[in-house]
Length: 341
Image (cartoon, rainbow, N blue to C red; front, side):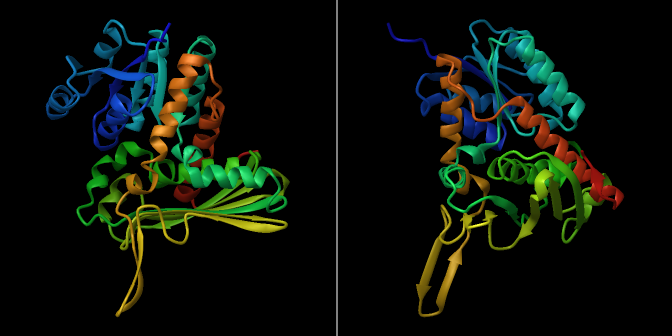
């Protein structure tokens, strides 16, 4: 007898929410989107017209109250994530939640406690790079000993300059550049180095373009260093002002070699040679670089719900990523290193 598809309600229909809704609605075997929630009328209209949904509501509580939902996908502002995950678990729903899980460790720990009370439910926080083919291949090679013992990660997330400063209005609730952007690099460093414990962090940064960030203590360019137990290190760079396009690149140095991820001809980008010389045309957003990884991630979530398949990332991982990224933010704001051990 065929297994019933996982019926998913999606909360949040902004730029990423719409894309994930489209993937879940037609590209993930064993899943279907049956409902949506958004406070914005234009987004609710989109769900009705594009996805053909009848159950479209304005708030998360109304979404959870709809009959027949097996799971929810949470793609709302970060400040809402932890409370919504807890509410979904209390309502008996499996949960996919976009990163980060929360803006502080205490909220992450409340989610962990709620999940522990519902061991029959699966929760996945969306650190999509773990599902990207290049990062996954690099991780497998490192575990197989291809570069000896890894000891240093250098990773950067650089967004294309948006002269309009669109993201500035979301900055007060994003947690800042390190929690919003560098948390991906924090996660990469942890899993590529073998999950060592972070001991101490340092950070500095500037506002190069978007002066409006000063009002909420944020920056548009930052650099952080993480010291791990056992002498391992990570150096992270974040920028919202790269003129050429979006870049997400990582190098892992080991005692017998180095692995570089995302260099050369980038996914979605082009290296062009003509009479004027050779140049690289960058990619505009994260979607062109990681769009293919999202279906893999969502398929893993659906398999976990339907079949009990293991997930490569736990809530403890999500909490640790927030712990480190929040400490980096504190180090930047105080101008002092922050001890985590």
